[in-house]
Amino acid sequence: MNNASDSWWRSAVIYQVYIRSFADGDGDGTGDIAGLRSRLPYLADLGVDAVWITPWYPSPLADGGYDVSDYRGIHPAFGTLADAREMIAEAHGLGLRVILDIVPNHTSDRHTWFRQALAAPPGSPGSPGSPGSPGSPGSPARERYIFRDGRGEDGSLPPNDWHAAFGGPAWTRTADGQWYLHLFAPEQPDLNWDNPEVHAEFESILRFWFDLGVDGFRIDVAHGMAKDPALPDLGLPEFSVLTGPGQDDHPHWDRDGVHDIFREWRAVADGYPDRRVFVAEAHVRPGRLAGYLREDELHTAFNFDFLKCPLEAGPLREVIDRSITELAAVGAPATWVLSNHDETRHVTRYGRARTGVQATFRDRRLPTDRALGTRRARAAALLMLALPGGAYLYQGEELGLYEVEDLPEDALQDPVWERSGHTVRGRDGCRVPLPWTGDAPPFGFGPPGTVPWLPQPADFTSLTAEAGRADPASMLRLYRHALLLRRTDPGLRGEEFHWLDSPDGTLLFERGPGLLCAVNLSARPLPLPDARDPLLASGPLDSDGLLPPDTTAWLQRRTA
Ligand code: GLC
Image (cartoon, rainbow, N blue to C red):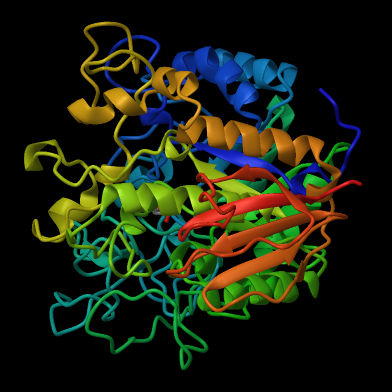
């Protein structure tokens, strides 16, 4: 493959493959590597630069694979290591880079280490030979995780008041009475990153996959790996993400200790002659992301502020400015993302009255205008793809898929559903298997007769890749055209970017020479600047050549 440009990652469009739901080669209802291989030409045609594959390792799938039981293998439902090797080679042959998902904050409770930990004696506080977190019980197998005695006279109360992301306390008691920490499901025990053995193990895992040819890693929960060893109470009524001020020195989010880990990882990546890259999933407060992207740390990070921003000109402009400026200060490019496997699909979010309300974990069903959401999603896609830096696409957004909010309750598999006592449906609605062809389930997701692991709605008929290819006005054709221009138009290369004046509720910016992007999020049609020819628009201009509401256009300087 062409490795000529060492900086490909600075402007890459990276397509997220949620492997269980992408394409099923063997008809067991679960997506797999064979399915992915068969669709690699589709991805190359679409015009993306890389794929990010969500965890494909052996796993009990208590959290869709984010509960890894063996970091050096492939889940048998997804294929074999040989399949993975061939897939990577084929992707490279098509000019696609391959990024894997690494899950270092926690393992599965079925991981050998955790089984050993449960089988080991609890140890006693301060016992000799402990690698050493203050107050920890000290049995070496338990020192790889975070085990503690409980509070109360008989230790029957959790060691502190932390909450788990999916609901309930962040501690589970073992048969011998000790407790272990899990910031997510009980099946996902948190690793102890104060233990050098954990560092050594993950460096070896990185090398294993780098040696196999992968081009980088997306780091799951990058902001959670370091904990305050004193494990102090938080004093909060429920689980919270880091959002506001006044959360300095949080005992388990965004602690400075994570940076030591990433410096080690960067050194591993830089030991390879060709560029290997990292992207952080780090939910941090404004101003803190750049710390992860210093020269000797990670390369890029997801821009969740952009994803969560209301689709309104003022807030968007602020987020865009802040992102570019903050990251430029450490020499890192901005990235942009509208959807992923944890969030309500943006066609649905943008079809709601308040487009900024969107955390799937807590979302309730809200009235949604899907046609409006689709129009806005088209406008948002052209905005995102015109911005300087990298972009992340989530599988199916290029087809215009929406959040499936009426999955039958007995089909729901996200642990959030159980852990919330059936009050929060969770993230399955954005994980429904992709429709490729035909007019009935499984819509080409697998061979005829396949029963997808989540049911597909009947109206996916109009959203298949096949239907999209045939319809010049489809979302798929828009994405393909935009990605083609991104590759071929010099105006979209480089990192040049500046705002031009435009009416309230609209955005207007210039990229490279002669390339302009106009976004109309106001209620009135927007006159386009003189001497510019539309290159691509997310919807038709009106009869006077004005840009209608909820529409974006790319324009080029008219050559005389
Ligand atoms: C990340 C993943 C999410 C997973 C969680 C725990 O946020 O994106 O899907 O549930 O980490 O691993």
